[in-house]
Amino acid sequence: MQKVVKKSFMSVVACLMACMMFAMPVFAASNNFSKTTVKLNAINGGESRKSTLSSGSVTGNNPSISKVQLYCNVSSGSDPYTIYVLSPKGTTRSITGPSKSGTITITGFEGENPSGTWTIWIKNSGVSYKGNIYPTSTVTITLKVAYSY
Image (tube, rainbow, N blue to C red; front, side, top):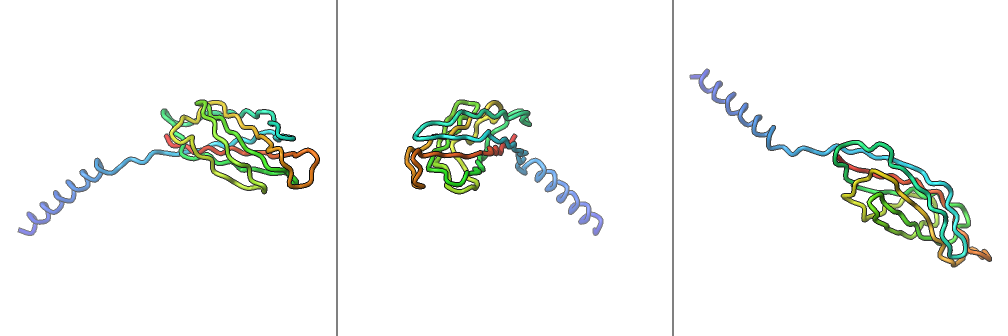
């Protein structure tokens, strides 16, 4: 009797384990890449030159962006500016640049394929709060793209 109960119990456990193996969700793997722009300078309401960054080799068959962050190394005395980011797919997003160095998250790229060339530039607001005759903005930006595949 005890052997029958033990065998039945083991059969139920084995069945549950097999069911769990097929019912558990599969989590996507993730990765990221980081690239840094040249120093971007914009003066008196103008735009900086455009800095192009290659994603390099991106892992996976169907990579999908989950998060885009910008680390901004802002030169002291910089006046207000806007950052523009162009994805390889052609999506352009803008965000007000920080007045101090730090990391900001920019949205609107989620779900896109991160492979290809990214373009980043800044535009000076044309206003100086520092007493500059010509408003000037200077920043170096590190793009960090997190993706799953």
